[in-house]
Every structure is written in structure tokens, then in C-alpha cells.
Length: 273
Image 1 (cartoon, rainbow, N blue to C red):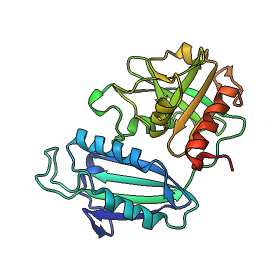
Image 2: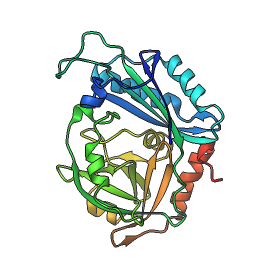
Image 3: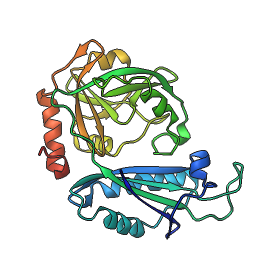
């Protein structure tokens, strides 16, 4: 079970207040950060996205030094884990009107890191649940994740590892808990997240560091006829895909291995054990 700590502002508290707006309305943000050898991976990138989210929601950004200090205290001695950081607007009266002054609620929880991906690669499916188009909230990790919850509830077969999501216009966006890249004509392509979806930290690393990696729209057919497909997120890194419906790929093609090796060289936390 995760180890949780909670603060109102910077004062520790024992439990969440039932009037917390994060609990009532999903009025807040979260980050999930890989801990490796007691250290957070991509901390600056996570804090930059959290800051963008606070700006979008009109919330004060928590003090970065305080967050880093508490992360270090919670993660000390952890060989490998996943730190979840939740920031809500705090406690308010009933109703949607923003509280005039409310210290934010901060929650940190440390749990075990996910298991490594299967050596044979991931098996995916298409989800029926569609993502709503809302450009104002696109890119940030707000707490409203019911679409992902409903999409993940569509299957219980342990042989299916992830599901791919489209928006209400039918455009491919991402997986339920990862970003998506497809290799076509020697170029890694990821769908844009201007209308919905999360601007993932690992996704950002790939776009900055992989030559010819680009952001553009992808159709279902382009995914299914791609030369290779990967998923990625900040905790699990790059995940090779082996199957989507009737389509099969080798998870060990050179282009995928090159990506994983480049990531491991940049971030040793993602090196194979």
C-alpha cells in the first residue's frame, strides 16, 4: 500500500477535509513521478507542467523547495517507486464559486513502481470511450479522469495491457495512461494534444531529443499500418507494442531499440536491469 502524507498549505494534516474541492469537483492537478535510487526523475519537467496547470486553473503554484524537500523525505531509501503528487484548490463552501482565500491541499503518496513491460511487447485494443474536446484543459494533468476510468473498465482480460483512445471527432489521441508514437516512413509521429489529452513528460523528451520526431494527427489506419508503435510515460519510459487487434509487430525492431537505448543513455533510471 502507498505511504501518504497530506498538508494544508505547508502544515501537515491527518486526513482530507470532506469539503476539499479536489474531492468534490476534481478541482486540482496531479503528477506521477518515477523515483530511482531515492531521486525523482525529470523533476523539473514535472514541476513545469504542474506550474502550467496551476496557471490554467488559476491556482497558486506550491513552493518548489517545499515540494522537493517533502519528496526527498518520503523517497529516502527507495530503490524504485512511483511518487504521486496531488494539488487541490483547497477547502471551500458548497458550490462552484471559487473560495476567496484557501490554502491548497497537497497530497504525496509513494508506491511500488510498475512491473517492467513484457519482453514480447504490449497488446493493445481500441476503446469505445471517447475523450471530450476541451482545449482549455488539454495538456495538463487535471484530476478529472473519469473518461480514462471508463475506458479502462472496458476490458478485464489480463492479456490486454492498454487501450487506445480517440476523441469525440474520431481522432487518435493516446492510450489510457500513456502517450502514443507511430513510426511511419522513418519518422516517429505522435498525435497533438491541443484539444484533449496529456502533454506527457516522456513524450516531451522524445520530441526534443529524437531526430525527425514530430507531432501531427494520426488516423486509425495510420496506426494499424505503421512500421512500429510505442507507448511512453514518465514512470515506465518507452513501451514497445507487439499487437493491436489483428496487427502484429516485433517489439525488438532496431528503431524501437534505438529509442530505448537513447532514453537509457539520457536517463539511467530507464536502463535495462
